[in-house]
Length: 106
Image 1 (cartoon, rainbow, N blue to C red):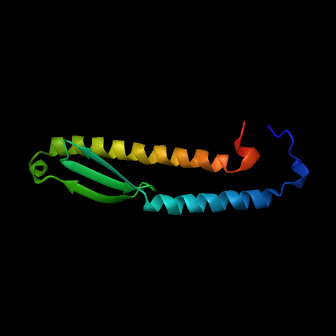
Image 2: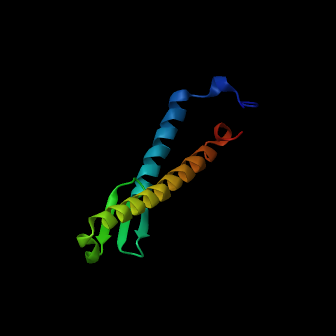
């Protein structure tokens, strides 16, 4: 795994600092990304940013009379949009590991 790397020349504090910087940058970048899910043919529209913070929720007025349908559609939209954000986080983590040179490679 560490073939060809002189481990005595690696400054662990420096590496950890770089990892922290990349994580902070990723969090900032994620705040600008918006993921949206619709359910019930667009009766529910939920948007979150890449940090999984809800930024918008639209509910069709007709659902206000039908609590059960509202709950089902909200759960569906929430699960879908959270999955989108999680997949984005995984992709960003893989990209970060690839950016760490030999440490991120097998």
